[in-house]
Amino acid sequence: MRVVVAGATGVIGRCLVPRLSAAGHEVTGLSRAAGVDLLDRNAVIRLVAEARPDAAVHMATAIPARINPKTMARDFELTNRLRTDGTRNLIEAARGAGVKRIIVQGLGYAYQPGDGLADEDAPLWRDPPREFATSLRALVELERLTAEAGGLVLRIGHLYGPGSAYAADGSFTAQVRARRLPVVGSGGSVFSFIHAADAADAVVAALQREVSGVLNIADDTPVPIGEWLPAFAAMLGAPAPRHVPAALARLAGGGWGVAFMTRLRGASNARARAQLGWRPRYPGWSDGFEAEYDRDPAASPGLS
Image 1 (cartoon, helix red, strand yellow):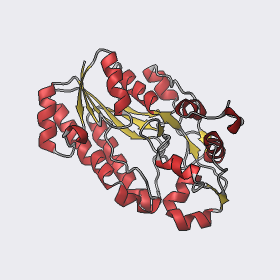
Image 2: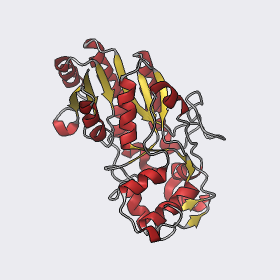
Image 3: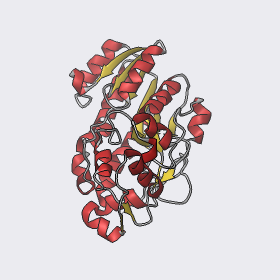
């Protein structure tokens, strides 16, 4: 199969391209690093036409290395355009080239807060914090465009692995090491993590099946931040995170910063497991995080 991959040099793309090649697929990468801008409609149409792909995969984002939740709308402007205009350009190019299989990266933690894990039928956030509203609109548009094209959106959970914010040199990890990231309130946000390699495996699996709509791509064991953040700090040999009330955290992180730490809903991967025959190699966050870090077992009680 000939596959065009937008975002080939991103966190997922770097894991995906070699997996596609190993599976016998012929890959053409689209990335700004390679001089192809997904927002350049004419360039995308030309390159896709030249590649003559059987499938198009959109994993492109432009998430900044460090995120300020108060300025998320500004900081995610380019990513939001990649999710709207970029998706539109790639789908137009794919249709023009006769491509039938389209797979697009969505987000697995934009669900309306509620009890229990969210499956794909659960509604997305109806009343998001102001700072997240623009990003949510972009995600809704991405899913609409993909649905109209008969494609598949993979709602990716909290992504970790090389190049991510949770990597050894990532911004989130740096904040944990410096004890700048507290547990807010009861620490009730439930995180559904996913390693980049597992996300890439899900894309490969999806290319082999006629599945459309949306699927959650997350590990098997969603976990509250009040549980995993202190454990992650211990894994790093860092001081335990502080505990702060939501009102105080709002001053520093705004409404989205507090919601991110207190209201996120975990996502069920049951439908992806059933429809794709896919299984994450790292079933829980600690399995994958431990694989990413060299650590002194004595400094990480409870994670062996």
